Image (cartoon, rainbow, N blue to C red):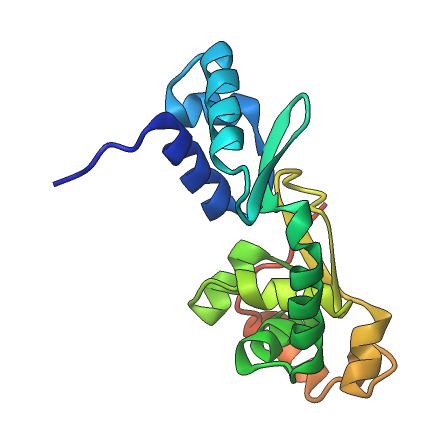
Length: 181
């Protein structure tokens, strides 16, 4: 039996699940409502989040669910704690996929690893080991690549110094196709 969410609850679920800003246009399509109705739903959700740990951040074209400004100190402590820990197996796998693929999108990383890599990507981004740039082929997604900090972390000065780099980079061993511009 499927329960129906109220429009503000549905908006909250979409924003939480995406983890990034969503365009108002997409939200009207997902929720099957008009832009005017969306404005009302946004205001309703904003009101329900007062005195809670979350807040809506809204621009003319996008909406995002973020931590409330009052939670900044707590979130800062959490991030500092995350940065103090060792990289986990998932983050190391994600870093390896990006390194040996010469860059990869989240969907490509997920395909190689067989699991959702969002948390690993977040950890690597927070630590400055990877950076995301707009994909030259598909502007809707990011391609992640290693930073110089990652090379230092791995103890190499360039990607070709990675163990078994030439062997694993050869075209017949690549698990995903390289983008062509």
